[in-house]
Every structure is written in C-alpha cells, then in structure tokens.
Length: 143
Image 1 (cartoon, rainbow, N blue to C red):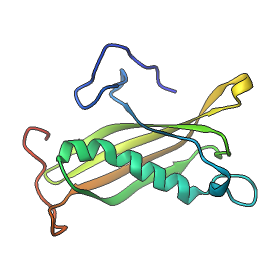
Image 2 (cartoon, rainbow, N blue to C red; image 1 turned 60 degrees about the vertical axis):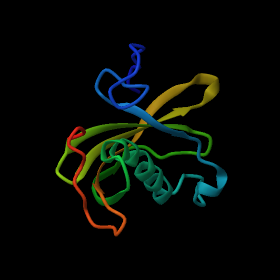
Image 3 (spheres, rainbow, N blue to C red; image 1 turned 90 degrees about the vertical axis):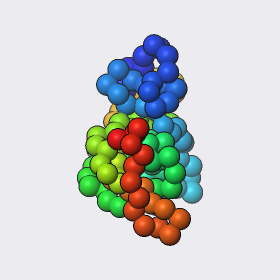
Image 4 (cartoon, helix red, strand yellow; image 1 turned 90 degrees about the horizontal axis):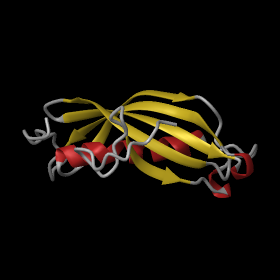
C-alpha cells in the first residue's frame, strides 16, 4: 500500500500521496458480492473501480462525465468477504474532452495479523459530456 503523506491538502483533494495518488474510495465486500467459492465477483470489483476512477475526472471536468474505455484491467489476487479495499487513483492524462486515470486497489486482510496486498489495477478513460450526452471540452484551468 502506498505511504500516506501528512503534508496537507493536495491540488485536487484533501489527501494526496507522494506519488500523486489519492485515496478515492474504501469499501468492504459482503456475502452478497461473492460467488459460490467465496471469492468476490470480478464484475463487482470492476464496478467499484469504475466508481473510484470517476472521482478525479469529475473534479477536473467540473461536471458530468461518462466512462468511455477500460484500457486495462488486471486482477492480481482474489478478493474475499471482509477484505477492506482501498482504491487509489492518479490522473495519467488530461485531453481536450477526456481524462485517463490509473486505479490501484489494495486489500487489508486478517485483522488479527493484518497484512495488505495489491488485488487489482486498471486504467480507465472518462469523457466530459454536456446535458445531451455529447462530448464537451475540459475547462481550461483543469487541462
């Protein structure tokens, strides 16, 4: 898990890590999120990554966004019921209408003998859209 800096607010939010990543979501999967083997469904994890990945682009776009691409998605370790998942996002690119982010997911396991493992990493692209759902420019100050 990345080390957390206590140097105060970052440029886009209240917590920025030394490598530019921000903690954007924490969630614990429940039994309803698991398959018959007790592992958390990959689709559930993907949905959480999409939610987490949208946090920074929404701030940058200053409005409505839509997911337009999942450029890469890698499952590194299974996720279990009771794991505490932390989602860290970092902006990789800001284009004229789009924002690409990298999301890393870490699981805190076994509270009695706590350890942390990286379970997922993904790159996603979001596009700023207007009320009609058409692409719109990212505000100049954010690009």
